[in-house]
Length: 399
View 1 (cartoon, rainbow, N blue to C red):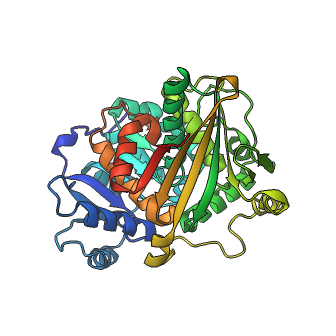
View 2: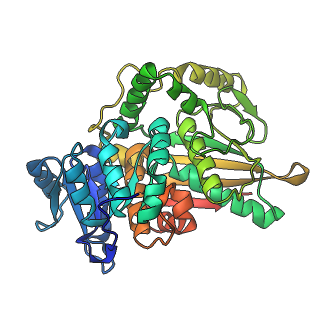
View 3: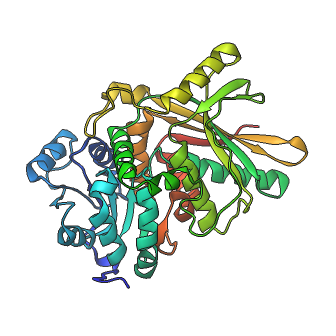
């Protein structure tokens, strides 16, 4: 049973609270809300939150937000503080990770009191635990708990959804096999992503069952277990694309979210759906060698000096970043269709901050029932439209 409920959202003080606004990515989310919506007629009423009043004031000045932009001081370890903050707003956007270390109290508070929630979590073992713990609580309160609302996994979750829509339009049925292939990417993964992977590996060393969760494509789909999936870990020559494909570091979380969206929506992609993700290299022997090297890199994807939480690229570096993903759907009679998702800005920071902010705004008008879900399951094409209109992300049928 949910307790401490206060689900009358219309009377709440704020539309959105950005928790973690003094961190690198949280500041970018706040900066985006301020610059993109600050003076518009449809601007959400939003606040910045964190543990330190002085640092919040510094960020408010740094991003050029009005002096009366509200600030909320709250400690992630305090059940009382998290619940009090959650009761003040319709939506919480949190960048305070690793979530398995710092996220328990906030997500539970939002589930109890009916506050919509979105984060940047790429920690499948923690997510699986929270689904078991909070899905029914959130359904009762009406809270929509939305994990993985950044580069992992929105372009992939929504990319597969839109590819399946195109497949249904063309063939009258969904594709039972889609390949997600990163054609090109410029930018860096966030310090939060690196820290989350480190925390997950430490937790798995203490609890080996976590490795089973990490390896299971259906770890987030309850009792449903679909067909054996392509591993995405073996270098493969993609004849249709003319390049070699290598393992992609974000695939273990993205594929799980894609399958959860399919599960939550009642399997519109089919119960026999197969999906994997890889990164394209080059044609010929050079591409094969790059793909084989990528297999070794997967053992330590962030290198000897991984990015640290709170650190990130310069504004110029964020501006120069981009990503380009193609989804290849297989249809009848050996037919295929290609659907592209392309985003401007550094994927781990510049684009991710926009995706999280737009997820929060989309949740304000969402009428889906509560639970622990995904951006695709809760928001679907409404979020696609927002991202195309505001976040410079395109979703395009190519062939």
